[in-house]
Image 1: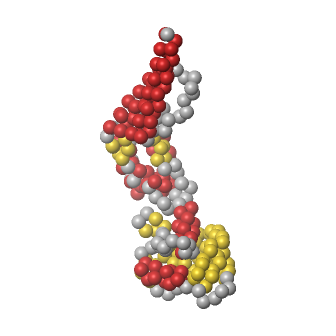
Image 2: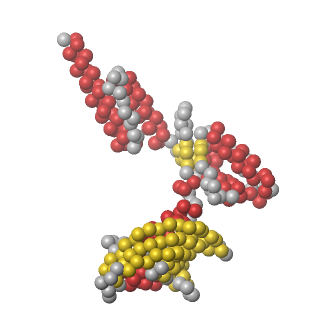
Image 3: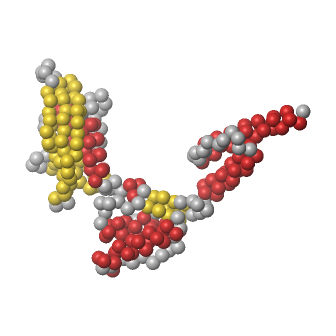
Length: 271
């Protein structure tokens, strides 16, 4: 009888633990690791209760700037530093952050001057939850703040072209700038949208085959991405398929924290 009572209580605890884990997932988004069936349910129950207390404390903790969380260290203005002094200051700030379990990455494309400005003028002012626990790390990704890396130049051009060459959905002008240009003049986004939709309406089908970014160059503050591309088309006016293949170039501008497409010239299409 005692054995049956113990078995029944064990099963009840396991069921309660499953409900506790589900509640943590639904309420706090906590992802529960797989728990071995051999683990005593009493121990699991206590662990889940501790997790809930931690999540409640974290959820109710106030937000403060990262600068305040790491102890308000001295921050020297960038224009007061000599070029050779910038890197040591970056290392000092990163070490102070690490002591407080605050980490962020360092993109390769940023110069020491730009990264120091990011750390001191933007990152340090970013709000974070004022809560610490043994072993807890706070990691922030640079891409959460800026999409200015080289990979975004390629990504935004390729997504614009896929948007253009996909007749299965409406053309949305993904990553298209409000400040566009053709070969000679400045033109509006509305004009580009009209030209792109007219181009699409002239075809029964458009099929992207391949895209490869070759190199990016900046001239007078404007970015140019050179790429190879291949695509096929079935014009309304002809029954024969056309294949366009070769090198293209896209002009991009840095606007509102994003690389936006301002112009495209490639085999078979341009604006």
